Length: 216
Image 1 (cartoon, rainbow, N blue to C red):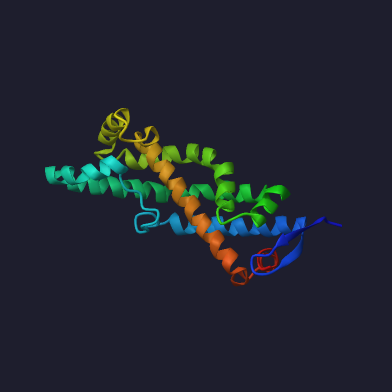
Image 2 (spheres, rainbow, N blue to C red):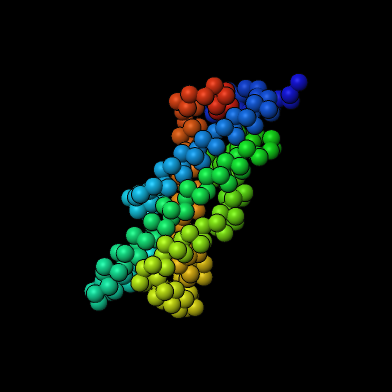
């Protein structure tokens, strides 16, 4: 017989949950959330049209954009921002397989940690398991999309100087690295939103196992 664990329910008092049920339920939940997040972001305007994840120029460069626009670079700056977001939208669908595999390979310990964790427990799990391989997977996709824009090379030159002066984080000084990092931040943020929604309304998912695991 499967071991059970007393868990404080999200919508009620303590209840008994078998470890196997917890693992099955959490795997289903985070796989569902990851697929939904990829669907929302990996389409036209998934990033560009969503202010929560839209990728803009980093700090000092954004502040200098007014001067650049006044100097006649407005169209090029807009094209660069659009290209950064289109690159993110193109890269995100490639994450689906890796995210699903991470969910399916989750250990019972990971599952129970997520059941008892806060609103960022799924985000933390995916970031730990997938951020490094997704970074390597996204970099060339982002590079191909941004290299076509006239200001891309100039971004690296200006951002590099800003980083050396301590005005910009070193990781943001390379356009490919900056966009890739922001793409992953946006992906994990939306996965987290999916988790919070599921925790608030497990009945609405239509899944009996999710109602049992997260319904309390």
